[in-house]
Length: 112
Image (cartoon, rainbow, N blue to C red; front, side, top):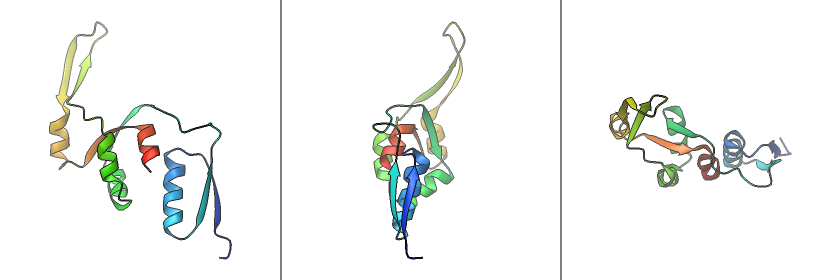
């Protein structure tokens, strides 16, 4: 294959991850994005399992650790804001041998 230039539409998680791996394997990816800059914030995601394994192979775990939201507890509340249940999130992470983060979607995309 002579032409190794690849155009990727979208600078979200999928686009940036694809660009990372294409570059690693000798391609020349270019990302185009309709937004004028990477989106900030977004929803929080629990990041573990296969995604954590891939991030480890990408060698970005130290950077992701810096943007981990480090929740202490997850609470379930009713419509009157009364706590009805919950869990100690740090215990969950410990149970997963520390292989879990809670990240803002935009922080994951920027880190990749």
